[in-house]
Length: 204
Image 1 (cartoon, rainbow, N blue to C red):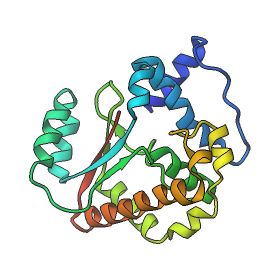
Image 2: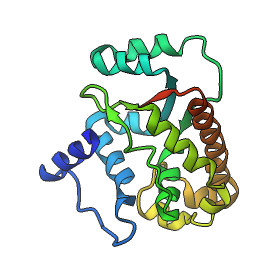
Image 3: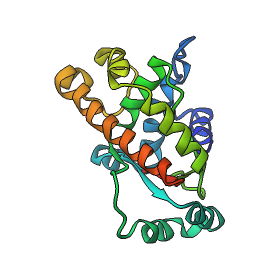
Image 4: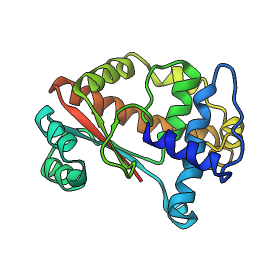
């Protein structure tokens, strides 16, 4: 994946410190790696302002246009999103926390790594209708209580799970924030899957 290659280049250049690996939770460091790589590329100011993830549902034909013309992807995505109704695909800053819970719970969904890169800037990723459908089925069958059992604010902050709020906000606010976003993600993917839609994930 493009983001993984960016992180690898930064580590080879000595710009990132070593990443601790764990036998079962190996990919939990991906989100932390990406935050550090994003800081290197965009600067701390933009990172502090917030790195957000959002999904936009698109038809299979629209997705094909985006894949065929990645340099115009943002413009085409704006056109495809104009006037659309349905559940929001906006995750705000909850993406890394949700991926942490998915990994700890063994849920086979990765909001951050799944999909194929559109262009070279690492900000847009195409999700096929098949991937959207599979994600919808997995999320629909996974109650948030299953994920919430794996919430560990101390561990999340120690692993640099973005944003660095988990010990500060704790179960009431931090876990509640993830729960609200998870509920909306389930609604988004189920809604998109029913119409056979693909999706585009934007990051930045």
